[in-house]
Length: 164
Image (cartoon, rainbow, N blue to C red; front, side):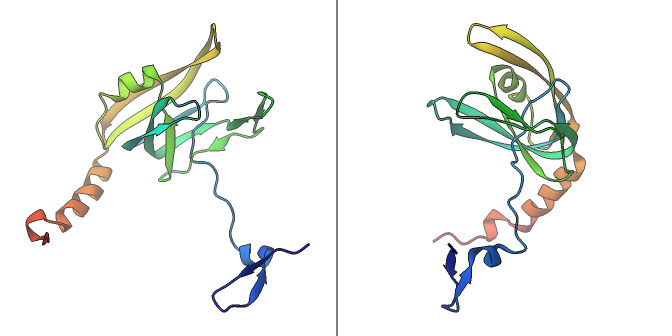
């Protein structure tokens, strides 16, 4: 069975042909699959999200400099499917790091534009299962990032914007 998609010319195209030249991008989520997984880069923002169980979580946006991690996904049967190869961080790309209590406590002190490093250093047992220790280190300010954002801010001056 062929799947067809209506395009702007009102002709039908096979979905496979329609998708030629496009691929699904890798997940931006950093997953802590194995001890030693790490990412470092510039902290550029955060958002809050609501998880499936209704809990709230801070999500930190990192403009990557370097790092690698083993990506994994939990399966429906609660097993874990881990990639056999490390995901190598692409410098300049935006990655997402999910917050937990210890990560959030340290990241409260971080400023937008500051360099940060996250590293999976250990595991320990808890009544609910295995927990992971993620080390967070704060570095200096990323002057390149500050210069990038400063030039954008300089282009838009509030007193020059008409408000109706």
